[in-house]
Image (cartoon, rainbow, N blue to C red; front, side):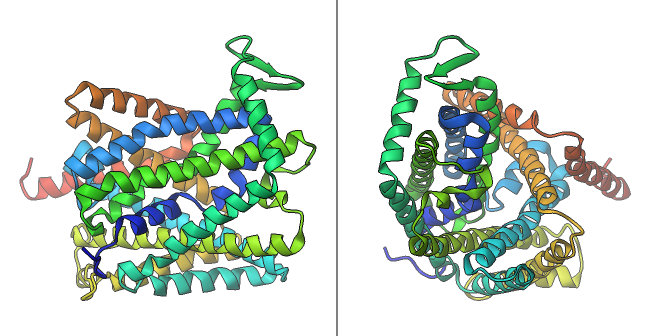
Length: 436
């Protein structure tokens, strides 16, 4: 059956999933992991996080098939924590998505400015232009607005393939060193690869970093209701996008490691394009990566605006203006929510323009919010688990949760404050209506 403008097919959904997960991380995570853990340790880091992520994928597939909720991860968290948490869950999710948009827009604008070689003063103008253009794109029917994601997927795969082909010698060196490490482990805490020392501690540190290269599949729950033949296609979408991203990251990690072992010097923030020495090709691939980054911004705007729409549909904030934001057009697009979401993003971008806030502060805040939501999803899955398979999956996923928890400091209390406010307001509402 041919998809209508109101639904998306399995390949469109898979490419959109990739664009949710892949963005700026493709440029710098492989080299940042190398900088922390070294040539072989960084590959171990990618492999370990890949294994940790598998239970997460299984959880989202199971929930999508057997416990589908139209509100996505917000409904899962509310179900696990109770009715009192609804306002806190929505606010946490909106904060994660809303504060993430200006970060990605700002990174994309900076990459755009450097690619064109123009003055840094143009960066704010470029950032606001990107946000406005992609907000307008998200006011189109869903099937049309996600075409950029499929184009991004094709370009990204082509770019990575080209980078590896042009550095096939480095890929072979990196692969040989890694395979050799498997058979040269000398003790639990330390193993040696010829003249390169690798410690498990550095690999673990790099693993925590690269985990955020795998964050994003949660966002698929925002539009599973729009997936054509959901029960048939959901597993295909998750596994296709997951395997594509795993192969992409591992291939890049191996190539970066091999290039470093072959004598190439670069810092973590320079990214994979340092592997391209021919300037015309470097410029071409930079333009391609810009398309990938734009697709990533588009995906965040899509997920955020849909979540904002769901929030206003919940009726947690009464009023005529909130009801107007909880409307959709005849194509099923919440245009008012998209516009309001764009305005909020513009305000945050102004904060970056005038240096009232920094990109690193926004990233930390985004990660903390996602971590709290991640815990709520695990709790929901644990509460509904019945079989041994389900208990094994949730316990495995919980291990990755505690690894991430160990990274954050007291700053996560900011996110937990949402839930305290949510509990108090719920208690007061119930008390005023005689619910207690």
